[in-house]
Image: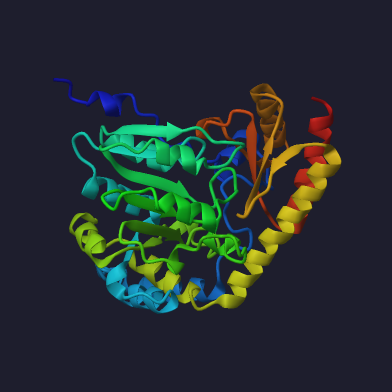
Length: 364
């Protein structure tokens, strides 16, 4: 028997966007514009920053193991009970806890191709079979996903808006899909970009429903600008949360992360400005790509994905933008080898990207 199981030996790790520090070391550039990882270009809420700084004097103490104050604040904000809330080191940590809690033996996980890769990695790390249904016109094909449900299907993962395509499935589509999902199957509804899509009347905000077999996942990494401290949260039926809490690592998220998230929830001015910046950035990119004749996917998140002619063109654009100190995200690791995802930045960052992209694209 090998020391490392075969399903771990063959596993491809998560590929993050290129770090700013790495590009600075490689090219010696002083100014880097990172439009690769869907981070908040405004930084972090001043209220959250102050709360984390205030908490530093307490970091010799373990934090609340159940994020007591944050759980109660989230419960109040979204009209649920504290026992319906779970927190973790980002939504990825909660996904990991879900995998360890509910998947075993002959269970099968089901999702779409061309979606957030963490779910795929977490499933395969457990040695569990995974079915990935192809995208249809770059959108989730919920009908095909429902058609692939079998007696061994245990978990279905849906991201809405989807990362990296940015599009959504609608309220009607979601309800028709849930009508076909047996109660014995757990549905993970990843709403990491919820804040950017919530204003759309067709968006199926999961908190409108009370499905006992749905776990909603959200994060403070995007709209709230807390990516660096790693904190996410989820909502589910009390029974599901109780079982997740048996497996969840103790004392996560950290004390500063809990303090920052609690304060961020109270900073609507920062949140609204973030959403406005993302909306204006999307409109800027739409107008620019329309004028350039570049295909793009309409987005309800804080990024826009473009579709180029080939993977070769993607690599050329990516490499040449790096030489200019601009980091974007090629999407081969997501299964979209001819796609590039561009995070909406500050207006001046978007303009600099457009200037250099125009020159590069014309030379292809």
